[in-house]
Amino acid sequence: MPETATSEEILTKYEPVIGLEVHVQLGTKTKIFCSCPVEFGAAPNTNVCPVCLGLPGALPVLSRQAVELAISAGIALHCRINPFSRFARKNYFYPDLPKGYQISQYDQPLAEHGYLDIVLPSGEKKRIGVTRVHMEDDAGKSLHDGFKDSDRYTYVDLNRSGTPLIEIVSEPDMRSPDEAYAYLTEIKQVMQYIGVSDCDMEKGQLRCDANVSVRLRGAQKFGTKAEVKNLNSFRFLKMALEYEIERQVELIESGGKVVQETRLYNVDLGKTIGMRSKEHAHDYRYFPEPDLVPLRVSEHWLHEVENKLPELPADRRDRFVREYGVREYDAQVLTLTRETGDYFEVAAKASGDGRATANWVVGDLVGLLKAAGKTIAESPVRAEHIGELVALINKGELSGKLAKEILPKMFESGEAPSVIAEREGLKQISDTGALEKIVDEVIAANPKQVEQYRGGKTAVLGFLVGQVMKASRGQANPAAVNEALKKKLG
Ligand SMILES: [Zn+2]
Image (cartoon, rainbow, N blue to C red):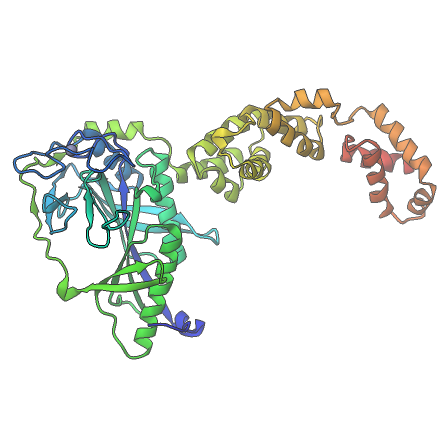
């Protein structure tokens, strides 16, 4: 095991190959096969019934809402939605699995052959293949601590048993922890965007396992992979992958062989620990679920779900660039959440200048929101008012500098920029008469600089512009000041 860091040189000889299996909890009100509520934090074993307790004779009934959310996810991941899919029993024994099997999908999943485009930290785009999306139910939860006899007993809470999940299986298309991070980020964003899930990792609504192998750069064949489980935060995903890649490289470099096994990421140790090797792998004895009819998705139903879907983040990003002339980076930030994108569109329509509006939203407004610990939905500044602010600048009624002074006041009071400007007398001086008067005063007060300028030292102009701006308390229009000074100094 790598106690000392493997040298960069050795690491770059190898190429990591990563595929992710992402579990997303569907945002239904009830469980997938019964009408028990899905509720985080309820008293243990209160949201249960014979179906999700796995009592003999209880029969599952598939939730229509769960299927529709799963179809939505499949469409958003550009998958083919299979008109015919089937549930299968995945048999294994675990104390928090009262049925003795999980109802999942095996050889006939709901959705297949999709992809997701990710944006890397460098700004480069990459397409990651999505092998399949299938539906399944969640197990309960073993509680290993928190009780006074926790040293001897483990308790089981079955509230989570039967919670609807989808599993999104990617192709082994990722080549670095950063790419895996970007992919999981994009999955989360897309699922939140289309209302499939809140993807709250702390509530277990987004979980991730990774298949990791390494091979010499340029090699065609994949190396032997290890499955790393328990990657339940973005940070841990990256840390675990970095550790696992280094471990495998070091193992190979020292003449060893990577064995196919399941490894668990131990957060406290910062290491992946081997759990079971291939010889001890589960044989799940999958077979078609006899208690459920096959799932048929008609064209009509598919279109119905499709029509309800909002614009996807990647499409919206492209549209913001195309339609509003927004920079790629700004478009990226503006589509992080649906609310931010909605806010921007209202503001851009009000200002008539998308690019400048994007600047104000992504820069100053997001900064103020962050400092106040607020989301854009809670913004005291209305989108229309940001639009008005930009329009006032474009009309020459406010300078950029004045606008920057006004925005925090808008944030405080929620007032329109024109109202604040009016009350505080913060209007840009565009009136030539008033401007000329200040220019004359500045020329009269700085004879030395005026002489220098006339003697050919034109760089002095900047100083004089500064003096006029100062005398006008920042309210003069810098372009107009420049022009007026040049004319007068002639
Ligand atoms: Zn139930």
